[in-house]
Image (cartoon, rainbow, N blue to C red):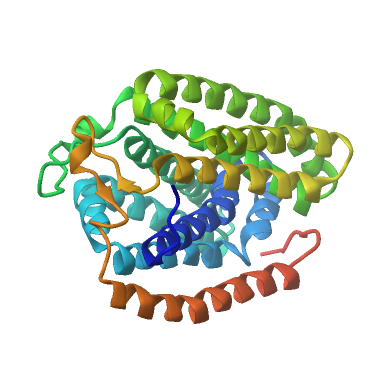
Length: 339
């Protein structure tokens, strides 16, 4: 069922890279989602300080993942980025907006100035998370590809109920993930406020996640039929749910780091569920499944995949080492910096 070849290895590598992006940039997007809910300027500054040393490094995983997709599966990259051109341009704009907001917020002490960039940071984070979810929702349900593997649909049609539901679910997922990270990195009054939010955020995410899964089983027959043929999909999905349920338990026990690791693992299991369900498809075509892009018809040549694997064997450990070192250096609780 799962062939061990260069195409499959690169399917796994691309999946791991995008999973890394979801886990890492997911929490700092989540911090942005929650940013306006705290009222004190000091608390907002602490939240920004919590992600300040790592947020730009987190986005490296998106760049590396996108570059790997382009190099290993150029046909899939071309189809997705041309078909989703306007949403991805808007995503790029929102990511730039939040980056500028982080850098500009503390350049002046005027309250209206900081409020302006607080709104920009939060709005950019919410829209970024939402667009990522909408794009993923369209990939999950399948998009109409023609015989030339081109997306024969309009941008407006990508905003369908299924994709919108996944967009909202993703916002709540990242908000929950970000709240757990802030809980881990703060103390005192702000930590107490965030601790009070987390049960509601977990409840909202789990509710939307359950509705989304039920909708998927009804709306995307391919998922149900494939899952029945691959029992491991159910095992991975159940493990993911159990890991997520460990989040409130760990928080109740005061083990914030375990809660954060559980949240990361839950996201990894969700991505793994998607990967095991859709393998060997890269972009599922609906309703004509025969036009789908797979790890074979979307891939570069075997020689290219082999050379790329050597490069990845050198580059990915470097990115991973950089990420680990940054998190180690900036471990511990954050404090307020005075501007």
